[in-house]
Length: 347
Image (cartoon, rainbow, N blue to C red):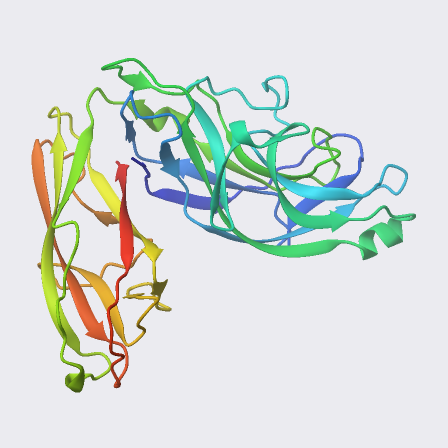
C-alpha cells in the first residue's frame, strides 16, 4: 500500500563552496535547488511491507544543463541522478545521507521505480539519465560542449526496514534538509564543484509518523461488466452505460487519519486529459470513473479522497461510477477490456 501527501514547492538558491572539479549541473532557469515542504502528517503503518512507498512527490518537469568546468580534470562522464546524497555533511560511508534505517529514497524515472538500495553508484546510489559529457581541452570548449536535457520524474521514500507492532512516533532521524535527488557526474560522484549540482531537498521529515493501526481496502464489484452494446447508436461523446461500484475502507482503530487514492492504468491507453481509459483492442469506446454524487470524472493517475482527513470511522464507503462512452461515431465490433489498479495513500 502506498502513501502520499500534498506538497508545496519553492525555489531555493544555494551556493556550493569548494574547488573546481569535473562536472556541474544546474537548471536552465539558472537555479541550483528546489525545496519540498512536507506540510502535513504522513501516517505510516509500522508493519508496512518492505518496499512500500510511504511518500511520493508530485512530478517534476525539469530541464537540466551540465558541463565540465575544468579541462585539466575533465574526462568522459555520465550524468546520474543520485538519491539521498548531497554535499551537506552528516552522510554515511558511500555518500548516503543518514535519516535512520527505516526509510530509503527512491526515484520514478521513465515509468520505473528505482530504490536506492538496488541502484549502487560511485558516491552513493543513482540512476543514469544517459547524458554523456566528453573530455574537453579548454575552458571555452568545455562551455561550448555543455548539454541540456528535459526530464520528467518524481521522488519518493519507501520502507527499508519495518518498525515494531503498534509503534508510534517519528520514523526518521531529525534532519534540517534531506537531499532527495542530486545531479552529478558518475565518475566524480562525491566531488564538490564550484558552480554546483542541482538538488531537490525535502523539509519536515518529522511529519513522517508511525500510527499504531492500518486500513484495508475492498472494491466491490472488482470487475465491471458492461455486457452487450448495440453498435447502431454510436455517437462520439455519448454515454453508453453507468455501472456503480464501491470502495470500502476498514480501519483497525479509531486513530484519526485519511486515505486518498489514484487509479493507475494497467492496460489500455489514456486520453489527452487523463480522464478516459481507452481499451487497446477497441478505440471506439472509453471508460471514465466518476464520483456518484457530483458525476465529475476522476482523472487517472491523480489523487482523490477516499475517506475524509482525520477520519475516525472504522468503516467508510466511497461510491463511484464506471461510465462507458463512445469515442467515435462508428462502433468497432468485438470484445474489449481495460484494467486499472487503485493505489492508496495515508494522509
